[in-house]
Picture (cartoon, helix red, strand yellow):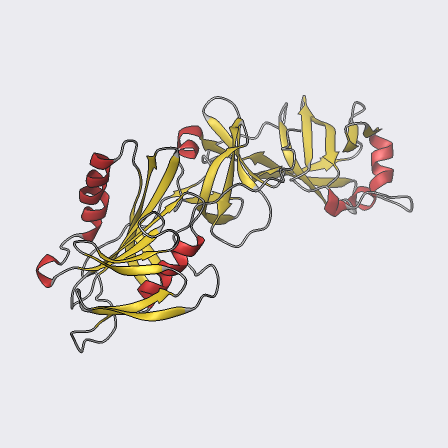
Length: 378
């Protein structure tokens, strides 16, 4: 059985698409007379209007990254196609300024209680990786462009300031209702979901196959002369798609879909990726190399797997049957068929059926017979 060793180190994380304030912070009203809007800014930062830029909110050292920009565009410069602007025009602008610019394409973002359209860009400045979030709020009184720049992994204060700026933004030269204009007829693409390679049409090898397994119906061993083995196969992901994952992308691991908050190699292991999701999650998840062109999807020390079929195992078991119970590398119990039955059934039973689940149990078929069950204690 191939299983990952538990990993305990938490790596630095990039911000996700759903932005929430990292902590409660005192703010104050700010009126930008130059562009006729007002919003709120952190009291512990430095903020002010900069010509040809807009309101700049510095969340650390004034004049340096990290910061947030709020810029109201004139009515004659309303966006005709914000998706094209973010995916092409602005991307090409950044690529002209910075080498090796990476882009997460435009999609819907929820910021400050509003639904905006945004994209994310990453590029190097010296030894640092800069993350730039570019958001657009379409409004009848003049579209608003928000920019947030921060060093990768150091996003909390900047994202909190951005969330506040978006939430409290309002024009000061109109009586317009403080609601963003909907994107008329503009279809914003949802993030694609990376899913395991489909197993449709895959044949189950009951002659000489090895599978993850869940053992059920053990009460029928003595009553009906059988038990059931549910067979599972490890989920495999295309290596190129795994290695191309970026913050904002979506991944299906097991039965749930997660949004990538950060993903990077774990320590010095080029064949292991650690992924942090935006969704609430305790533990470790990511990908482990499974040979040329593929990765396993993992949560904790478990390879995710998909149900293939179930098979009824009739008693008696094969003469060559073995049950291997693994507690640790040097703590292994080997049982023959009779002792396996006794361990599951009767007054001296010591293995509970629910222990024999697909995340820690595997089976081997040889010449059409079940010849081995290997179980690792959780």
